[in-house]
Image 1 (cartoon, rainbow, N blue to C red):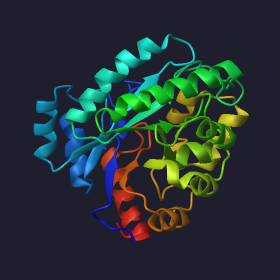
Image 2: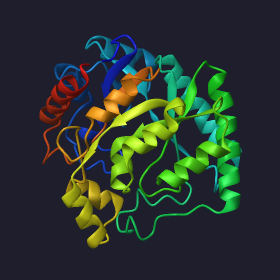
Image 3: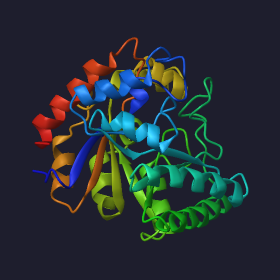
Image 4: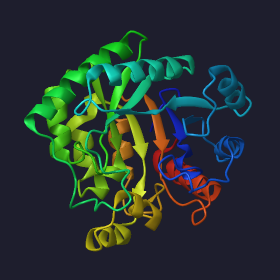
Length: 298
């Protein structure tokens, strides 16, 4: 189905140690995390809060385990702060990822985001950008895209629960406002399903723009509880709203078939933030790897 040299499999460290809630997996070490990634059969990783920031040190640790860095999250604040503040932090982040051999940079706008607020209801308090904020976001992302291109890299925009770019309509608008040569899209199955969207429809609508893929599943019974009880994003994570592909309700076969029939090249990243005390990271990594092999042939 896929050409192995075109698509590689990574897994995010957030299943072992959570960047937004350090108490989740606080005892799990960096070495345990990457060793279990390799043991489960993955080829790469994104960057977590316990990863060394020295490219030399990180290269050595990953190389011993046959792993590479696929990308890493960058928080932009283009709608609420001067562009120069975001640009300065972005260049440092870009240069680190370039030194690690990554080709794409994950960017998400955090202006007025509620994703990191423990007690803010996820669906009731979602931010909605003004016309002025949309203009600032589109202009700023274009500039970041040009900065990435200086190193032969690209930015991939991460639509995310609790932010101003969450829904299919908001993704549509962002793609309309930005230049494909400057801004690409990260396709995240779990965030789309959580938001009530059809991931396959979004995939088909924006396939030419997609240059990075996050594979995550959802537990619909938990999502219903999040809505009914007005839980926050962080509370939803703790409750187990997300899980790995094959353990929730998303049908991935058609998604894989669509991607296999396209010209997509790059990484598939399993990303399912859960409480590692309740969902053993190695067990779920193995489960995800087995499901992807059976479903996609990778």
